[in-house]
Image (cartoon, rainbow, N blue to C red; front, side, top):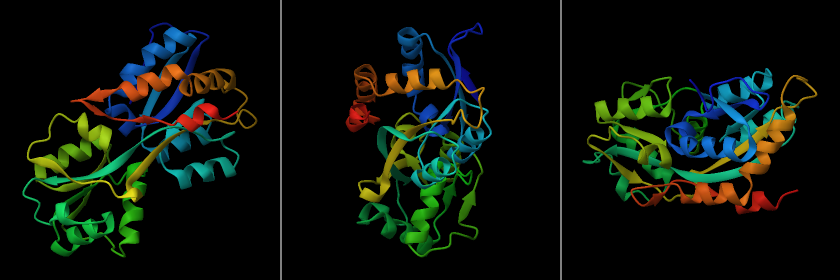
Length: 260
């Protein structure tokens, strides 16, 4: 999926690969017009999972990426695909499921305990299965719980966050989501937020400019301008001020604005 602001090709055009969770949150619609107004940059978003976003960056098909999977980001930088990693904002992952809560997630004290309950009761669970940051986090949590998710109760859809939530809504199944996508999701049906708050569910988003030494055509100057904007006071106000139903969806990384 590609989303952009502006209609005419301009010298200020740049491509940014972003996660589906960032796009589904609705924050992109808030930020892109302000970015163009403040910087003159017409930003074209390629909306994909984190794994695909990083592959686009490694191939030089975008100028920068905004993703949320720390180990994969560190590998991207270590391999020389990106110049550096800059933390921009964060929220958290949450576990969603049928309000009847057959696996009793609401009684769990940790995310590990919640997932073990789902597996033990073989309650239906929808996985994105798309190598996204959310999928990577989900798999790490199953691993921490010493559970191999497989069988009829575990459905991998190979799709974005919105599609996974829609599938879970239709099935009355459990699913892991980032909080922003869940809050902005319109087809909740009988689903409810059942578990949150474990520190392991922390969800950090980071900005990684593509390395121009590998791909001289990338617009490193515009990527640097965008980074300056994303770590500015203007961005802080917009990111922290973005709310749905009175709930803040993201928190700006104050430390990012202090980095050189």
